Image (cartoon, rainbow, N blue to C red; front, side, top):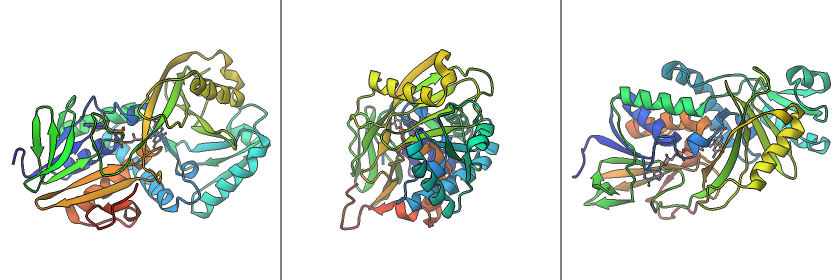
Amino acid sequence: MPGKADEYIVVGGGAAGLGVAYQLARQGRRVRLLEARTLGSGAMGASGGMLSPAFEAEYEEIPLLHAMTESRSRYEAWAQELGDIGYDPCGTYEVALLPEDIPYVRRRAEFVQAQGTKIEWLEGPALRRHLPMISPRIAAGSYAPEEGQVDPLLLIHRLKEACERLGVQIETHRPVLACRTDRGYPTVDTPQGPLSAETILVCVGVPLQGLSLPFEVYPVRGQMVSIEPPRPGWLPAPIRYFNRQYGYGYAIPKRDRILLGGTAEEKGLDPSLTIGGILEILRRAYHVFPDLYEARILSTWAGLRPATRTRTPLIAEESLPNGRILYINGFYRNGILLLPFFSEATVAYLLHNQLHPLLQPFYKNLNESTPPTD
Ligand SMILES: Cc1cc2nc3c(=O)[nH]c(=O)nc-3n(C[C@H](O)[C@H](O)[C@H](O)COP(=O)(O)OP(=O)(O)OC[C@H]3O[C@@H](n4cnc5c(N)ncnc54)[C@H](O)[C@@H]3O)c2cc1C
């Protein structure tokens, strides 16, 4: 076999790939990570790092809400182990952009509260005590005090350090061109030749280099703007502003900058920034925060969120005569939030064959007669 039998090959060095590589290495396994570009160069490095199950799950997504809540609760331990990842359990807000949006924001708050999430409903002076910088036009919103954020760039850095410390062999600029079987062994083709292992984990998000997966991945472009805060401590926590017609925008305070986001556009693999996208982000932010008129723009970027047809994560397993391939994908808007739970639970499944009940709804066996359509 061209590769080592006791080695795990992880393809992709984003949220999913770094997470499982780290967890496997923590359990004493030998891991080789192949990344087409640099670590975190996909959606992970473009992301906002919000940890906000309350304002992310849609009404029909109760299993996802529970997985997100579980994952959020594991971040404190991850921060203790990894070091400074910008973890801040500062809570998160969702406000109604216009008065007619209030019933929607209220109904979402009531929905997640019924699922066990702590929520405070804020109006008038109470809202202004929490968020004195928002426009008087914003009349109501909710606060989820148990939520928070991390800094994705620090997270990439700390996961890289931890993986290196634990002996993960990281190979950047090493694309995988195909996943296949070679005499029953899971095998990947790279420009330098094929590599086989008993277990291969394919965590590529939106696949590059023409790599084909056994399900569709729909790239959802997110444009972002980073600005200088008007003053230190200006915004205490991430805030989403919801509008019935245009969806939502958000502002996320980092130590030295504020991230404003984000669009959600299906434009294939096109990573362009557009006038319409940036205009929309800034227009909404300015509606909520009139103080931002003079704020300096630091940078702009776009990333491609990997979505399945159902917009839910997918762990798809293909068993082969001499091993298995696991495809971990579909983290869409929540891959940073889901990282602790999904990586720990996937590795527990690999090593002990225990499928955590919260992981079950996202698991598919590709060998079963009906292939997944997502
Ligand atoms: C603008 C934006 C804002 C976001 N905000 C948040 C947020 O606030 N909170 C949150 O939880 N999530 C957020 N997300 C979502 C989160 O970033 C993604 O869900 C997550 O990064 C997906 O992780 P992944 O590992 O599946 O994919 P990625 O992070 O994209 O990583 C995949 C990696 O695989 C590599 N790769 C691809 N093809 C190959 C190949 N053929 N061979 C080898 N390597 C390959 C890529 O180069 C990449 O590094 C946001 C995303 C965007 C774009």
